[in-house]
Image 1: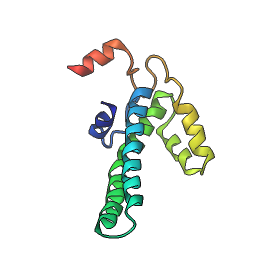
Image 2 (image 1 turned 45 degrees about the horizontal axis):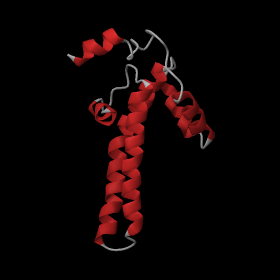
Image 3 (image 1 turned 90 degrees about the vertical axis):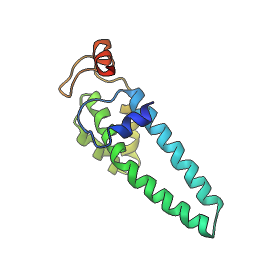
Image 4 (image 1 turned 135 degrees about the vertical axis):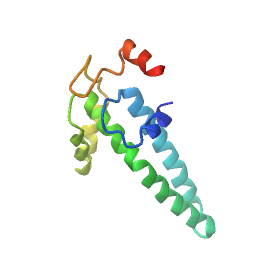
Length: 128
């Protein structure tokens, strides 16, 4: 499962992340955050509201590093430096440009950031 794989690579900014790994992590991360936020919005007052407020903050804080790491590895898969993550700091347009690139296929074969994670030999070697 991509979500758990990214969490196990908590702060690994080296290497490459194919579309499947990036989107698997991102979609599940967004779903979890949305569920917590919906629950939070459902309870306007009381102890549960406070607990859910802290839960949102803690979850976001715990997943920011793996999110940045998988984005960096995704940029590497596209043959670009991980510093392109900073593009997301540009409100609106930066996120749209990143989204456009992240939908595309990564470089075929080895690039300067490592082997193609989709190559059969490389995948079988990592499964052992």
